[in-house]
Image (cartoon, rainbow, N blue to C red; front, side, top):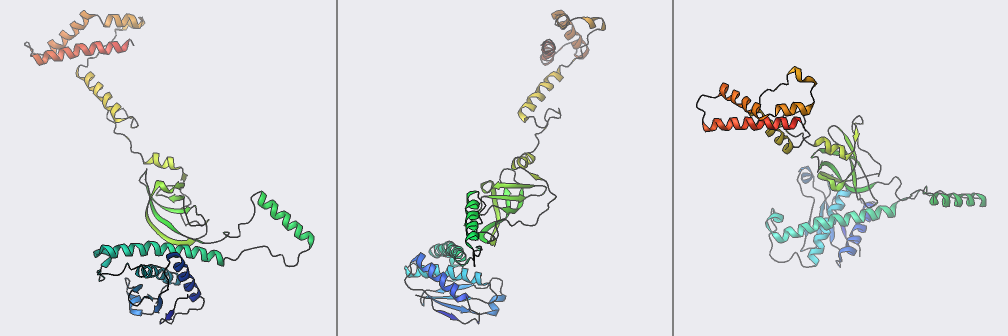
Length: 366
């Protein structure tokens, strides 16, 4: 049963009415309501000048859909019709009955009506999307090679060429070649691992409008084929374009891999041990710094006399590790640096110095 359309807007319906009837019929098959609503197309210039003016509403008592058409794109009008058709189906199922708040802000104040709006946005948009894709495919003009008047020889050559093209994957895709596909497209994204924010300039695109990978322009680089699960989509919109369309971007920016983007975003470690190695883990650097501090407490400059220059390391180490000489060194240090009556704390300093000397020379002979 066709939908009754009352055009109060002066809108030219030539060709447009057939599309509206097609959408209503498609929605009726999907949702299952028995009788379509009456559709009013209204003109309201004052409403059109309001940035947040009305677009449409559904009257459950009269089972009427009212659409405001002034200065609106036909596709936007049809999207509103699809939304209100969901409300019509809810009404037919008895879900709009009962006592519910319907004043200003009803979608926020009444839980049941909020649920009704959620269904209308989700189901209405997806219903319109599915109808649109199917309608475009039916209306697609196939770019077939015209046979017109063809000789037997020409016909054989054409058939042979078609078979060879299909066999080797060169056959024309007459359905999707040059076709614009409607889809939800990201305008601004954040790379999850690196935290970098960028703008997609290109993406994969299936016949059904699905996207699996984006090529993204960041501040300094461009990264190709980033999986959608590695991105947080911050801003997106629905639009249509061909599969190979590419947005304007800075072509002088270098193209890097996703791994290089992540590596560049990693911060340097703090150089705790002051050795200039910022890639060393902070744990290892802290341990090195602690060892240096311990050695510094009991540091004493030890030199090998020039006459011993020709001796072996074993000879030098045996001489340096002589216990009597070590004790003499400690006593000399205490005599120069400690008062006559050393406290218990100062004795510990001497003990640390003694141990430091042994440790230092043990490392020399390793």
